[in-house]
Image 1 (cartoon, rainbow, N blue to C red):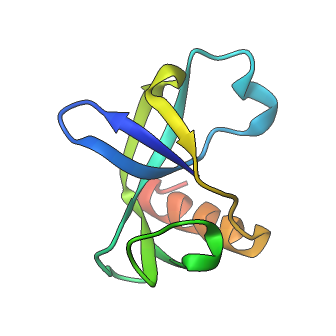
Image 2: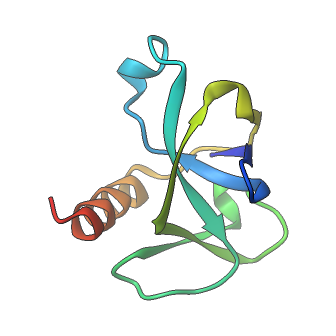
Length: 99
């Protein structure tokens, strides 16, 4: 998880969805926005403060709010998600994109 400056939206915490093995070779990564607003569990994966976020006791990774951003827009690493949460994110992205 990182803080990122998103075009037209400003600074937001995000989860980088691009696979780690490719990040070093790319100039941009795909991210999902983290929000304090709860949404449907099929597209909003709940995370708690243990993930490294501050501001809310619980937040949601919104898999319907995806962006591809230059890596230079990532300006502060916030933490890591538990592998089980990453599986939930994978499922939500596949559902949202129809994969």
